[in-house]
Amino acid sequence: MAKLQSQGVHHITLVGADRQTSIDFWEGVLGMPFVFEQPNLDDPEQNHLYFDPGDGRLITIFTEETRKAESAPNPNGIGNLHHIAFAVSRATYIQAQNRLDERGILHSGEVDRGFMDSIYFRDPLGQLIELACYKFEPPAGCSHADVLREAHSIRTAAKAINIDSEHLADAIEALSKGAKTVK
Image (cartoon, rainbow, N blue to C red):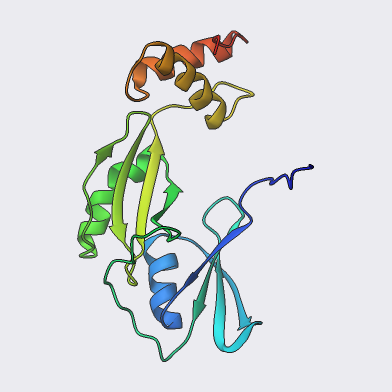
């Protein structure tokens, strides 16, 4: 049976509150340029806002002026969205905690994930947002996924719990030489 091969995320759409709350958060806090808006073609009572998260793809928000921001965390159940992670540069990551503090946005503080650093906070509607910064740059001609795939092979061979800096360094070395570890 043939696959329906995806080629990346096209866009993510979230249900928002009113137009201004959405623009203030997605453009004002996260720096995603507001691209355009139009009516929600499936529900003309709603507006559809489009933002560029930095890679030319889209984050879209359905808004309705009668809906107000409600910051209670979204339900955490089977089939529900847990969080959305956005890539940020090391320079931005270093500033994230102070910039969230300046806006009075509660956050997790820095979280070390082994192969990346993260900080978590909620949008005005309770959706968990993660700003993630890789701890490495892939060698020329390789992607972050290539390095992580190789580091995972090294990690599992070493029976380590998670990918750490040593696994990343060894993976980058192997990929730079054009070698791959045995799986």
